[in-house]
Image 1 (cartoon, rainbow, N blue to C red):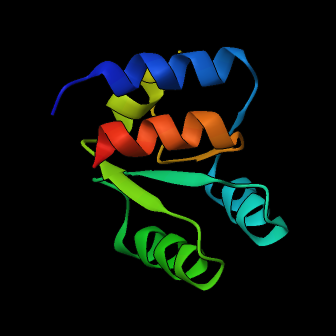
Image 2 (tube, rainbow, N blue to C red; image 1 turned 45 degrees about the vertical axis):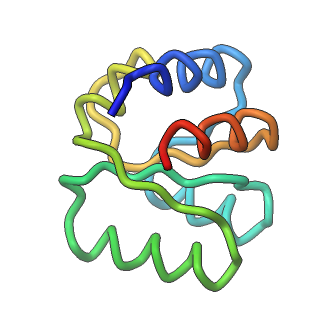
Image 3 (cartoon, one colour; image 1 turned 120 degrees about the vertical axis):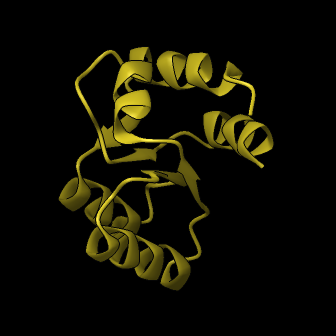
Length: 99
């Protein structure tokens, strides 16, 4: 997998178009603000199921990436398990790169 999506995620972070943290991500999905959810492949099965269920119910695309450290590094933070993209443009670009 090419890692260009990491820079797009970094841009989205600087544009303040992302939310991190399981509860906040679920809240944004519920409110209809999340355009894409990205989950770390090493997330707990409970977290993974919760996010997949919410995303399928609210019809929000969800993608899985390598691990929490890669996800955190992309946004300049420590390890992150889940990220919601709040901007349609960033979400579309990331979807093409992560598919």
